[in-house]
Length: 314
Image (cartoon, rainbow, N blue to C red; front, side, top):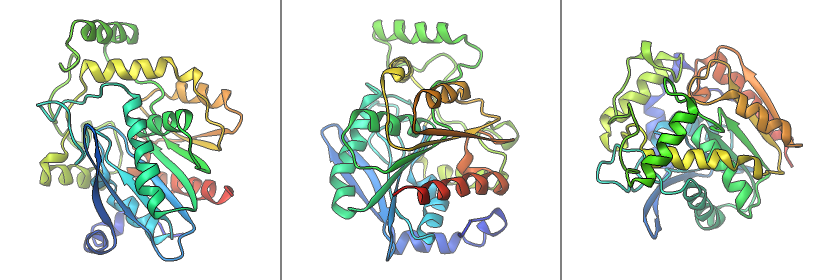
């Protein structure tokens, strides 16, 4: 199995860029509300397709290393920028504001992508790979929509969130009241436009190189930038979390949990896995939130479990 490494990543940039220019297809999917940006690549003799559901502030541009790596390991890849993110449409006048009307809207977009674009190009084995908010979207999609996926692998899924200095019940109440008062498009307290933290202050990854590439990508292509969340987004997420216990996914599910995560609540991941008969969880020591962009020893351990999971599915 091929693993991309930090020591070779800088030297591989020309190869990766050539792959995206020659073998990766990008297009827009039209919806009643706006256009969703997506991409795919299908190597010869591929037996399995990986459908990637990215996290908040993410899009396919950020996932170039992983997409290239999966392709080199013989996997077909499909990936879409969720509404309000990446190169997909943004609802509000200020494109930095993280907003969604209903959390289900994300999963409904994914369902449309699945039954139109993916179904047109792929009829074989399919596995969902979701990170953080994208993991919650993947779970919501599988619970609410008819599908033909064989399994789902979730990296640090957002089944609950940390509200930092504000007690969670107060944050939840504030988001609800703000929306009732018509302030759903306002930034939540403490949120602001896109601002890249210094590496030493970041809570996402302990890999300086992968963090640098992420920030450079967003500096070069400023349209990818996304700031903090609005009261509307926060309220939609809390509503989703409240009804999680009523949603069930029956296909094999694997949760990769980051031990040092301060973005999402690991306890919520444990609780969800406990009630699902076909689910497993593994905690990766010393890992920060972005497991797929971590240092090699963490990232490779996560991807090894991912490849094992894929191979275990029929």
